[in-house]
Image (tube, rainbow, N blue to C red; front, side, top):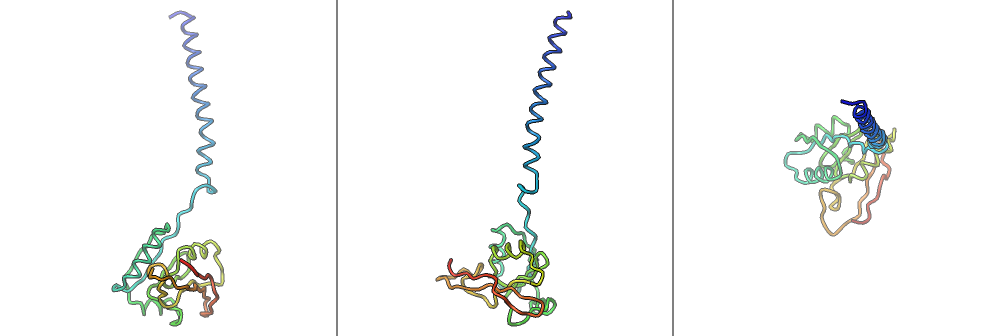
Length: 168
């Protein structure tokens, strides 16, 4: 092999390596940006749902939550025991109890309100509730729409309006 062809080979290798280096350098910042926490969507926490085995609307609420990005572990349980264990006042009770992110969710609370609770992380709030079973709440989905209110509650059972849902 002549000195001239060795020189061309080196030049080709140099050019190839330079282009590869450029491609890597150009791609790395984009890859890093794609992996930064600011652009990655955080996974929502798993829901621990306790419900009566005979209740179908509870499973419909779980499906509503799944459609909104949550995962759920559902346990059929004696709901009187669950309510007692978690000290849920009877006036605030509903058909199912959910534990998520250190909070209690009692009944058919919309995913948007759970999202808001978990984002705000209020220290004095034990959870959210929709006492009873409002027919327009997620999982019930009966028509015509009837407005309902989501309440937050503290350790003493004192409630505050958390959200009002006035339209479908």
